[in-house]
Structures are given as C-alpha cells and as structure tokens.
Amino acid sequence: MQIPPAQGWLVEIFSAIQGEGPLVGERQLFVRTGGCDLSCSWCDSPHTHQVTGNWQAEQTPGSRDFLALHNPVTAAELLAWLERLARPHLHHSISLTGGEPLLHTEFLRAWLP
Image 1 (cartoon, rainbow, N blue to C red):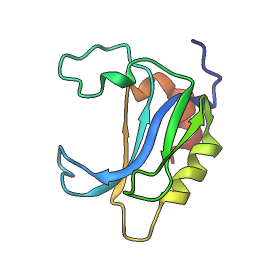
Image 2 (cartoon, helix red, strand yellow; image 1 turned 120 degrees about the horizontal axis):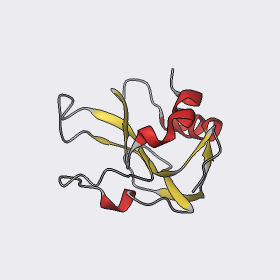
Image 3 (cartoon, one colour; image 1 turned 180 degrees about the vertical axis):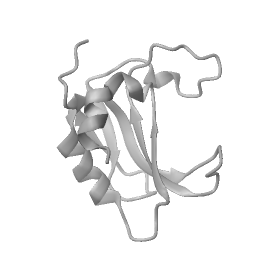
C-alpha cells in the first residue's frame, strides 16, 4: 500500500506507564504505527503488522476511552491529538512504537522535532 508522504498509518495513540526498558515505570504517550516487515520472533504486538483503515485515539490520558478514526492520518492531525493528551508534568516523553515506525519516514519527519 502506497502511503502519501506526510501521512502515516497508525494503530493507536494512548497514555500509559512504560513497562520495559530504561523508562519502566514512567508515564509516556505511545504512538503505535501500523505495518511491519520485520517479523521479529519476540514481537508482542503482532496486531500492528498490517495497516488497516482505522486507528484509535485515547480521549483522556490513561482512561482507555478510545475514539475510532480513519487512516491515513496527517502529521497535523497526530500533533493535535498529542497536544490534546499532553498534561503538564504527566508524561515523561513520547514512545514511538509499532509496527515498524521507520516504514513511515516522511510522516515522522513531518511531526518529530
């Protein structure tokens, strides 16, 4: 599937406590992209391997009150959702995960600092 340059396919964005790595225990905003061509044996998110027509955005940080939205998403739309979920002193950082985020390089360039 061809993705327009400044658009990407997402699975979900949400606020949660990081459960692995050096930031375990820290609350982060997670941006989970759709699509993966790696087939890693340790993958804990196989539902992200295929791109789908829909993605979901958490409406209130940590509440799991998801709203269904349509893919692809523009960088401006994603930034608006991240700003909506951002709260002073609530999130340590953003975790970019997937799927394989690097399949969306033009989309990443459009919204990452």
